[in-house]
Each structure stands twice: as C-alpha cells, then as structure tokens.
Amino acid sequence: MTATDTGSATSTIRDAAPARPRWQVLIIRPETMTFVLLVLGVIAGALLSPFFLDIEYILSSFTLYAEFSIVALVLTMVIIAGEIDLSPAANMALSACIFAWLQQAGLPIPLAIVLGLCSGLLMGALNAYFVIGLQLPSIIVTIGTLTLYRGLAQVIAGDKSIRVPEWFIGVDKIMIAGIPLPVVIFAVLAVILGLVLGGTIYGRQIYQIGTNEVAARHAGIRSARIKLSLFLLIGMVAAIAGIMTASRLGSVRYDLGLGGELQMVLMAMLGGTYIFGGRGTILGTFLAAWLLVIVSTGMIVANVLPATQLCVLGVLLIVSIIATNFIYSRTQR
Image 1 (tube, rainbow, N blue to C red):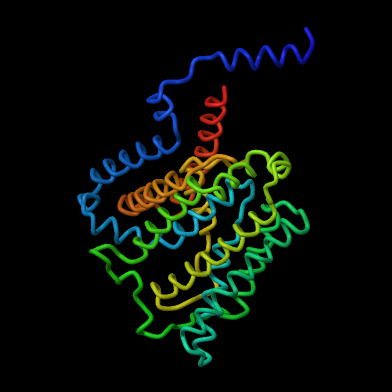
Image 2 (cartoon, rainbow, N blue to C red):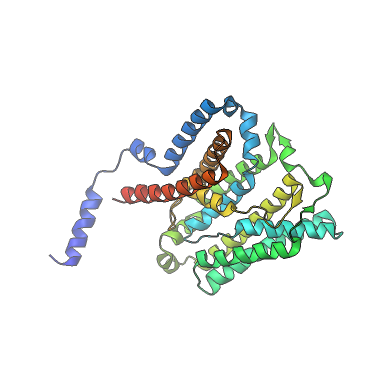
C-alpha cells in the first residue's frame, strides 16, 4: 500500500467515524471547563468569606482587573490569528504617562486624551511593522517593545507620580444600573467582539489565518491587513485602558500595569485560546477574567503572600496551556 493509499484509508476511516454526541462536545469545550472552575471558585470563596456572595463586593473587586480584562479580549483575537502581543501593559503605562504629562503641561483634557490614544495606536503600528513588515516573531518583537515603552514611560514620568485633575478621578465610581462603568465597558466590548469574531467574515478570516496562514493567503485572505488591524486595535484599546487606570488611581507612574501582561495572557489561556492560533472564543476569555478575579480575591482574603500569589498565577498559566493543548488534540482525533 502506498503512502497515498494509506492517507486515503485514514481519511476514510476518520470520515466514517461516528460524530460525537452534542452534549459530549459541549462538556469538553474549554469554555465549559472554565465555567465549572468559576463556579467552584465562587463556592470556595464563599467558604472563606461571606463577601463572595455579595454582588457589590465582586463587582468592586472586578474593577481592579477591568482594564487588563478589556485588553485581554482583544489579545484573544491576536492569539487566534497566530500572533501574540506582550506589550499592552507597557502601552497602558506610556499612553497614560503621555496623557497625564500633556494635561499637566496645560493642554485641555480632551486633546490630551486624543494624543494619548494616538500614542497607543502608534505603538500598535510599530509592533505591526516589525511583525508584518519585517517578518519577525511577534513574541520577540513585543518583549522588546514592552521594554522600550516602559522605558519611555519612565523617561516621561521619572520616579514620581503625575496627578490628574480631581474631576477626572473616579471612573470606577460611575455606576450604570448599579454596575461600575469599567465592568459595563468590559461586558459590552465582550459582546461586540464576540459577535465580530463568531458572526462575521472578518472573524472567520482571523480563525483561518491562525489555523493555516499560507492556505488563507492562497484563498485570497489578506492576512497582513487583518493582522495590522488587530495590532492597531490592541494598541488603541491598551491606551484606553491606561487612561481609565489613570482615572481610577488618580495619578500615573511609569510602572502602571507592571506585570499585567501575565494576567492578560492568563485570561486568554484560561478561556481556552490556543497558544498556536486558530482556536479560542471571546466567551472563554470573558469567563476566565471573572475566574482570575475570584482566584486573586480569594488569595487576598486568605492572606496568601504576594510572592505565592504570583507563583499560583504562573502555575495556572502553564496548566491552562497544557490543558488546552490536550483538549484540542483530543477533539481533532
């Protein structure tokens, strides 16, 4: 039997294999497992403290992670497209520093915000140039640019805090139907990006590029243009998140969002986004963001040392990557 015959036979057997029952497919989806972990996390948290059953307490806790969660939604799309961006947290810091420095120098707040957002867009464009234009690995490029952006933020702010006007402080205190504005923004963005990713040609093309970029290009998909749009989008959203953080904290430092890249990637991975691209959902990242908030808040309530908390997050990241790999390898059989 030739290799061609063997391949044909294997394909025939695979085609003839009975389809999995719908309930079984649903159970082994990463999003389902994330939801189960979320429920278990809430139960465990309730045993530690009755505050875990208080909706206001949970929403208040989430505002501390809302900016990272918002960026993680867009990062999910970048990873699905087969790339990764580790610079958004540094982008947040630099955009916020530029905004705060400009308004302190006397520029009107609206103009300072616009220029801060433009700086985020420019950072996304720079990442795209290196990755798409020069064909460099995105993980290496964004490790370099995160260091660059963080350094520039320190050049602007020094080791001091830059205050923002009193009236600009308190975005997390603005309520819509009893829900903090950052949480509302996160939920609305999740719905919009979920619809875009799951229900549009653009979204399907992102999946196709992440699955097999060469085949996608042969099919007429302009992968470079789509990846450019994703890097620009995450740059802009990171800048928005940075300015939101400035409003929540009331001041800006160069180390704003330090370590946030770990939490953003963790949210995407916990939600079932495949590190090699082509798989993942906004719903998964949405649930994972809440799970991470529950876990982090639970560790704080349990008086877990900060160093130990960091170790737990690292272990969660590794386990989530391994679990996602295992699930997707099983579903492909």
